[in-house]
Amino acid sequence: MVAVLVAATPLGLLATGTAWGEWGSDEIADVVTNGSALGYTPSGLENGWELGVPMPDYALAGMNEVVAYILSAIIGVALLVIIFKLASLLVKEKKVSNVA
Image (cartoon, rainbow, N blue to C red; front, top):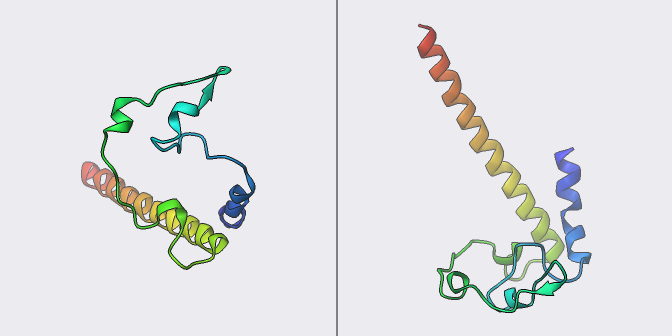
């Protein structure tokens, strides 16, 4: 099932506009909520910090956009599997030590 979702990831490229919640400071004032535009950029977003990411916009320079989206999804799934596996090992260790 996860493989199907990873393969379907590039379908987001067919959509127009930006994904909900992924607005930049240059586009937040134009976001429409309940029929009216926000009309301003919150100071925290305008003067906030910037996060440097390894794959901005889910892509790598020179890589096909569809391939980059799929690679990004695979990396995200792999990281989550690793994190949850490590967390489950810690929980199992605590249960074993509490029983003994």
